[in-house]
Amino acid sequence: MRITVAHHRSKEEIQQAVDRALDDLFKGVAGIPVQFAVQHREWKGNVLTFALVAKMGLLSNPIKGTVEVMEKEITIDADLGMLERLISTPKVRDEIGQKIRGLLK
View 1 (tube, rainbow, N blue to C red):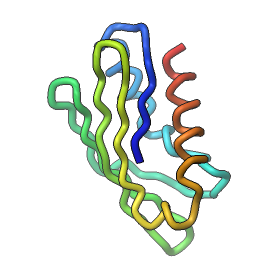
View 2 (cartoon, helix red, strand yellow; view 1 turned 30 degrees about the horizontal axis):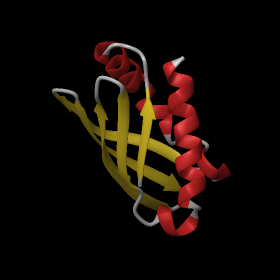
View 3 (cartoon, rainbow, N blue to C red; view 1 turned 180 degrees about the vertical axis):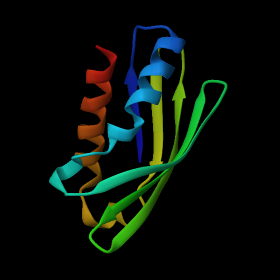
């Protein structure tokens, strides 16, 4: 899943906001009661590599991806694993896009 959102802030401001909000970015998506735990997060230049675990009851699902912060936009590439089979990818894309836009205000 790829999401791109335009921004009008400095790269540094965006990187700090993304770093603070990563834990909450996927929460409440598509109305599914899933708990997320960040296992890995690492910035290399303007690219954040992350790995999360989504837990639903006894099931756990790895989510991994990157967030690239460029001069005028942010691009999130995420592999939702088996969650993509359970939820509507366009709906998730829209909800995460809205969360990012809220983060940028």
